Length: 209
Image 1 (cartoon, rainbow, N blue to C red):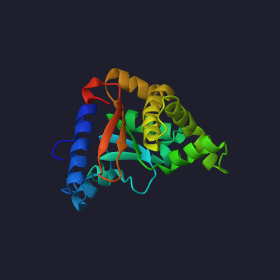
Image 2: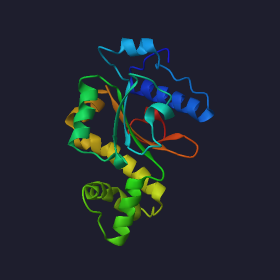
Image 3: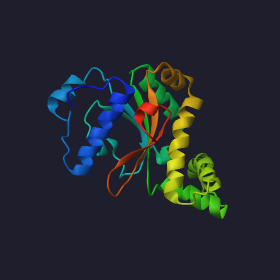
Image 4: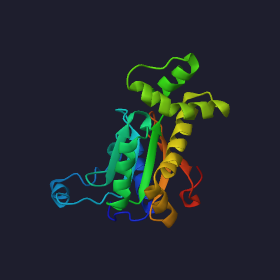
């Protein structure tokens, strides 16, 4: 990566390029040497925030062929939003000046599967897993209302809703997007072929979603 992306669209293009290399088996493993480590010892300037699921198959730096200092990564099961997530995102936007937030969902998501099962059975899980299911339930119900009973459709809906909620819940994120300093997109990752597909964006410059 010869040029560090500075705009939301540049950041998305860089992520697309890295994902294309990953799919093709032509990864470059950029920014992973000793010099890069030394350069970052005192500060960081990531060009994207990736807020994704905790699933072990969804390693952001690998699927987008990235290295040290490239992305600010936040992960929760089912990419569920809480106050710590919002605070982390606001830090990336306001303090680090990161221009792009990507919400990253994927097929065969265990958290969405658990929520689908809970909605259909009427049984909630015990412990703190219940909180995850309760937060994902609105997305599952909306997908069902739209006639999308397939798990993949539910994950896509949840990814879209999560991206939209970030701007609803955070004035800092909403303001940065309105000013054009940042953008929020939703991306769906296909485990089998490795493709990262855009499924949500309010900015037509990012293409159809």
